[in-house]
Length: 292
Image (cartoon, rainbow, N blue to C red; front, side):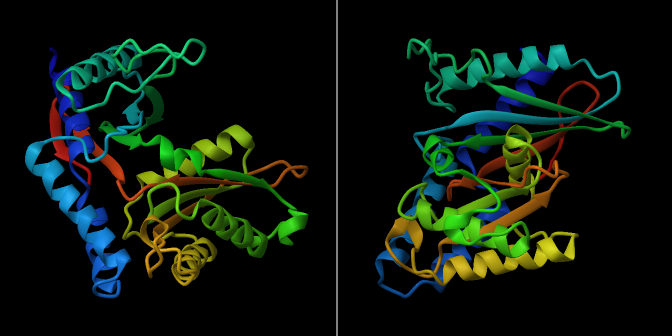
């Protein structure tokens, strides 16, 4: 294997088996906040035990290792074809080694060739930058949480949601209500206000690359993020829908331009197994440092 393939294989292994520190801290705080002896507290304890076992055994945190989503920030002239080839080979190797479950199937036939490689798998998103660094971030997004994502078109008459931040708040909270008991909560929301249907969903997933403990630089969005989490956690849905004080660990919201005729709010839901990791590569393609 090339040094790049080896680096990407280790990125996959660690993303699959280890929860990032910012997420683990949030989960521990959430568990401590639940009523002692409650089903919610017990659920959070089991989650923490699962995290420890996965890390110690270097095994997947969840049997659904999810869609493999690479986000690459690279300088002008970077060989994206070579990177894509290395990423696909790393996914094949990770699947053979058990870091990834064999769960990518042909959409027409349902057949599974056991490699997790095929049309659109893994997904590769490249963004050029003027800086010389090559930063690679990876999301492993399970099907259960992907299923409870949602997209709303404002105005939404049934919810009384108009084309403003108050309307956005209503539909985001409605998505949380619709997801209760599903998606393996406590969850994390990635939200995009604006865009078209495709770019809205894509940008909502990019919000999940942010740290849980960061703050939105846009004051209005920062306030909305804090409000969504506080309000959702007062709904009593709780971990896994068992009731309790922790329905969301975080909400990350971005906004992009839209057409006057359209006002979409796109919501990507991430489960508690928030598998997100990243590296900066050195000139040879090896890992220079970890990003989370």
